[in-house]
Length: 410
Image (cartoon, rainbow, N blue to C red; front, side):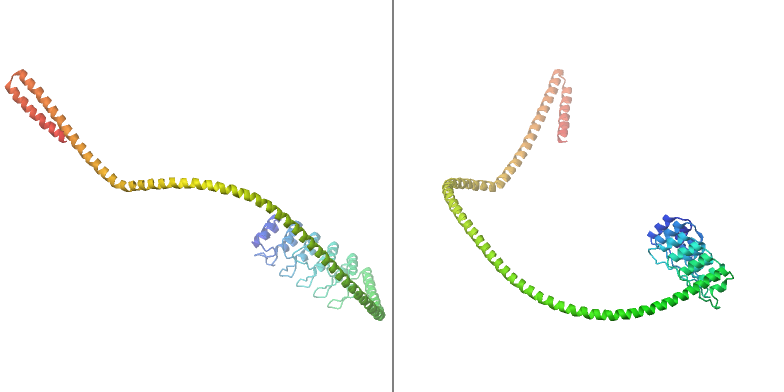
């Protein structure tokens, strides 16, 4: 994911930077192939001119103080290249407090690099975010030494105005004025040195006067405090007496108030009890009236109950008759299974009788059929008056009977 962040930064895809941050990507993670151990913000500050990419990285959590292998932060690159808008963007970080005075492996601060690059506006931008103009590199060469060597009066004035020391020395003991042959520059530095000495003397005098003044003020303050304490003690005593009198009056007032409240409460209770007694009397009267009505109603109900009692006695007689009949029906119902069984047996016997009757009827019908056929054959034989044919007819009758019997059996 870190290479994706790097790619988004290099290609200026601010929306991708936002999405990657929401996915949990570390926007300060070093690229896998970066020999200098650059973060995406190093890359943007050094090689990309899109300030909106820098703003996006800073907004979503990139470390503005991250160092590479040379100890340089993204601010070092922005300062060296004069990317003032990048400096403002990094200073606006809500995730990290930008440190404008971090030093690289040679002791150079971002301000040192900007002075070295002769970028007056960038120096002013760095000073506006509390960059210290007095921090030298590890050779004790200060930004003022560099500005003096270049003869840059505007930078010299700017640095001295922000507190740069014109009397600072490098490791060889050289002053900023030793770095230039320009007499104007030397004069400005000498005046700055003299002014600093005068300011130092004035400061010491001011400190002495201030000390004496403080001692006098302290003595006056002690005396005034003693007087104030005495007056305060007297005032406190008077206030205490007044408070005691007020508290006593308040207690008496509270007692009277309690008595008055008790009397009011007692009167209220009496009034409540009077109202309750009146309500009870009215309720009793209503109850007497209601009881008279209830007595009349009760008499009517007694008469109705007597009539109902007579009717109930009649119903009881009817119920007894119904019970007797129910007992008889129950007995019949209990005997019904035996009667039903006998009826079923009778039905079966009748079915057998019907079957026999059907058989007899069929046989009689068959016999009548045979007799009719025999009679027909005999008549034919008699008509022909042929004895041989009569025998044949008799045989036919016999065969017909046999065939009919077989068919009947089938």
